[in-house]
Amino acid sequence: MVFARECRQRLEESLLLDEGLKGEKRSLLNMVKLISLKKSDHFRKALKEKKVHTDFFSIFASKNFLEKYKNDLLISFVMKKKIGNAVKRNRIRRKLKAIVIKMLKIKGAINLNYTYIVFGKTKAYFAKHDELFEEMMKGFKKI
Image (cartoon, rainbow, N blue to C red; front, top):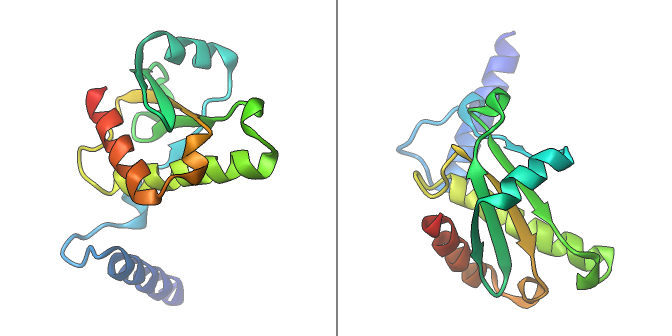
């Protein structure tokens, strides 16, 4: 029991040092989970409301309609098959997901009271991380 507590404390400290959050105390239990939408009805509801389009992605957002996930972020990353092969689509998805995770560490950057769908575009494959991050910040501020 004591060993597990020590391991958890070391893990939390290493995460805080890696992220540069020495002053903030964050526990692993308070971290926000990314939860993907599963049902087509949920996608339809989310696609009907707010929309933001950029050269790299499109963001669709609607108020949270699932009471079960109030403390988590409901977000799905979607790619069309027209974009390319699976390797290319997955790389775009990973890039966008990493940026969203990075944005969650910034307080107020993403509103957890919304459900989001992010459609990746071909230009996101060749774009730099910093450029995508700036566009994503602008996109989420518009919503």
